[in-house]
Image (cartoon, helix red, strand yellow):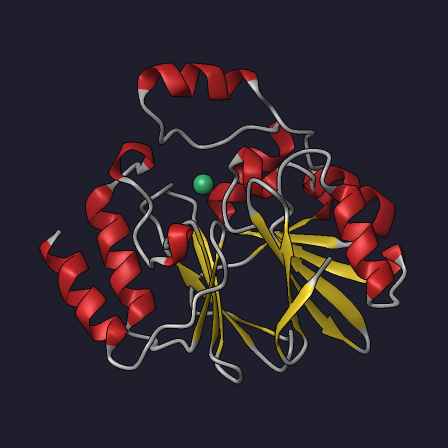
Length: 228
Ligand SMILES: [Zn+2]
C-alpha cells in the first residue's frame, strides 16, 4: 500500500527498493520503477488512489540499476507514460542494462540479470538544472557517484528530496551508499553534499524509510561526509 509522506506525494515500498508517486488531478508521476515484476504493486497503489493505469503519465528513473529500472517497460507499455531519464540512463534502458559500479564478481552476476528493454521512442532525456512541471516544479539534479548516470529530484514546495541511491536511509540512518557499490567515491561525496545543502525536510531514498532529518543534523552529516 502507498503511504502519503507529503501533500500529493506517496511512498510505495517495493521490497528491495522504494518507489514514489506524485499525484495530481491531471495525472500521476512515478519516481523509479523498482525490481522487475513490481508492476502489480504500482497498479494496486494507483487503484488505492482511485486512479486508472492510463493516468500514469510520467515515469522518472534515477539510474539504470535493476532495482530502480526493472519494471519500467511493463509499466510504460500498459500506461503509455513517458519515461524520463538522464542522457546516460537513457542509453542503458533500451538494452536492459546497468552501468558498471559493482566489484568484479558481483558485476558478472549482475550483468546476467537484465531487465526488460525500454523502447527509445518512449524515453525523454532530462538534465541538471531543469525544472519539470510536476507538482508545481520538480528540480532535476545530476548526482553522479554511485553510478555515473544518477540523478536526483527535489521538490522545493514540500522540501521532499528524491535521492535515489545518492543517499540511503537503511536502518533509519542517513548515509552514503556503501563504497563497495560506488563507481566514483569522490563524485558520490560531492553529490551527497550538494543534496544536503538543499536543506530538504524529508529525504526519500531508494532504500530505507523516508528520512526526516533533525534540526542541524544535515550540517553535522555534511561535515562527516566531507571527512569520510
Ligand atoms: Zn543503485
